[in-house]
Length: 107
Length: 348
Length: 175
Picture 1 (tube, rainbow over the protein chains, first blue to last red):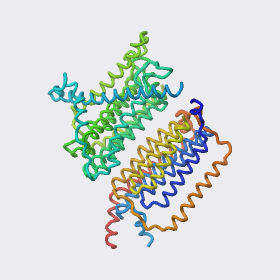
Picture 2: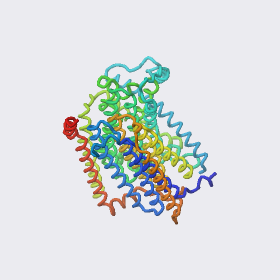
Picture 3: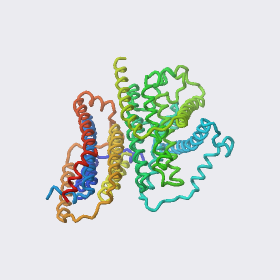
Picture 4: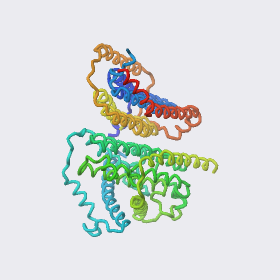
């Protein structure tokens, strides 16, 4: 039993998972019609990238990889605060969150 | 050690700790009712059992047997998930709390803690942060304006005071140099009461900030605006009945016990007696195992009494006073505590 | 142990991400993203980044996602509608995304020298992390704090009522 449980996980699996999450984030960003869901997909993409960074940091035991994840988290937090404030401001004016209907700048 | 005994012993410890915690929660309710009653110059519950000691069992049976009403227009998945989240986060914290000293146990495992992680303190902060979701989802899914308003205010309060809570613990971490709860406690055992972090570690400001922020975090008086029946018709748990309401209730008292545990571990020396390492550990293995446990429980009990004493004595804050206090007073004070502690440590 | 935990929590990640796309109401998507973030925190623990795992839960799942949930609840905009979006978007977009994923996956699987991680790999302690953060990377750290300050000011300025009411009367007069 100990042999099975001491098995190592190949790091490429982590990177594949990161790529899959990134691709799913892109799908959400392109195809969803609700502003907040689009924003959530952006956060999903950022998380996928964080996973890549941590994987490579574990590969080379480079602490700077993990510190960069810090910075990505801080930037994501700052960006989500401002982005949500913009969404609230848009909602106040347009009373809808559907992306198709927030297109007054087109015409 | 091999995996199966590890899992079984851990499961046993988890079950014992959870059962004790739930019994503790039930008897904390009784403690509160009797103490608040004595503060208000009346007896608390006295009729059920001697001194009302069987009251929690009867209360539990009542909660269980009440009709479980789910209103028609609630958003059911989140409505059912919210009390689970609240109670889960309140019960999980006992997993990282070490409550006894001797490192004895079967096959090299430690009997007096469930897990000893190097980031124990961060796990506590993380689980506290997740506890906000129970409140947020309960209020929104109830499809009720009072509920939504109460839950938004309550969660804004919890999120604001989480900052002061976390920052006040940084002083302890600076002083101890580790996040590992067991080593933080062991460092406080050197000189007995003079080396407890609140006295010898000079963290009294940190302790006061922590205790005030913890009162706000657990939505207890004087910060219990959001569950004040006279103000908001009950707050975020209006639409909940019988067992789900009891789960929110238990989550609140469970959080109180958790706060007491964390405060004793970080500021009051955990399981160390006031004489600490000044006297040699007793030879008898039974006394060596039980005395630290006794001291730990005594300290947590005194924190619970402090909670109830404050509830019975102080009037509650208004919401804007509460937010003002959290952001403009506690947060700068906790940053000041960090700066002062680091200066002291740098020049020591 | 690492293998079992990886499989379980990678499955949670993927299920949460797919659920985020499938659900129509944004609150369900937000909760799915919280599940993804917590599973990612466990994966960071498997990779030995213990401080990052805690920071992921405290910062991301415990603060940023609470903010998202607040906004969804306050705005209460309801489920997203079936839209008359172009079918061209679906017919070009989805294969493009699959192609992107295939390219990334191929590059990764051909990489040489990628190791494995298991119970014996080194855990990055908080001391190592903070040593580098506060000595070599002190400037980016301080710049990040300025960035957060700017974000606070921006969010407060954007979300405060004055700007909204200044725009609204003009809108009404144009209809």
